[in-house]
Length: 333
Image (tube, one colour):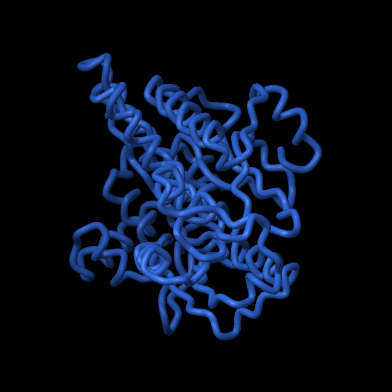
C-alpha cells in the first residue's frame, strides 16, 4: 500500500537544514551548534521529520549518529534544494546589480595558497561588485558539493577519479613538486646544484594531504634526501618565515609559494632529476551552466596563471576545454 506523506505540504526548510547538518556532522550536538539550535530543539525537529517521512533517518550510536539509507537520500535532496535557494538568492542579487553576482569556488589547499590570491586580486580590480564564496577541501569532499550545486567549480590539482564521474576537467597549469629556498641562499651560488650539495641543508616540509604527501615523499626518494631530521609544519606562514630567515630548503608543490616566487624573495632550486607532472586546473559540472560571475572568475584565473607562466614559474596548458576534455577522456572524465 502506497503511503501518502504530502511532503510538499509538510516539509519545511528547517527540516532540510537539520538533516543536512546531522549527516554532515554525524552528531546531534555538533549539528545543533552549526545551525544555531539547542540540542533538545534539534532532537524534536528530527522526531518531527521521521514522523513525516515514516522512516528512521539515523541509527543512534554510542558516539554519534549514522544516517540510514533514507537519511542519506533525504540529505542529498536537502543539499540540492538548499543549493538552489542560495542560487536563487544570488540570481536575484544579480538582477538588482548586473555588474555583481556571486561565484562559489571549491579549492584544494595548494591552489588556495598559490593561484587564488592573485586571481581574486584581479577579480576585485576588474569586477568589484562580484562576491566570491570559497570552500576549501579535498577533491573527494568537494565533488559531491559540485554535483549538488553548492559550488560552481573546483580549482586545483586534477586527480584521476577511480571511476568516470561525468565532470569536465580542464588542465590550465602544472604545479610540480619543487625545491624552494630564499633568493640569497648559498645553493644558488652553484649553477646546477648536485645531490651532494643539496643534502648539506636541512629540510622544512609541509604537513599536507595524503596524496600531496606521497608525491613529496616520491621526490625525496628520487633525490635520496633524508626527511627524518626535517621540520614539518601544517602552517604555511611558519614555513614561509623559516625559508626567508634561514638556510632551510623545502620540498613542496611550487605554487604554494606563488606570491613569494613572483616577488622574487623565494626561488626554485634546479632539480638534478625531472619532477613528475602534476596537472592542475578547473573541474566543472557538464549539466549546469556557469553564472556570469563564474565566467569572470575563470577569466581572471587564466590571466593570473598566464602571468605565472610568463615568469617561468610553471608550465601552462593553453588548450581549449573541448580538446582538454578529449585528451583526458579515458581516465580523467
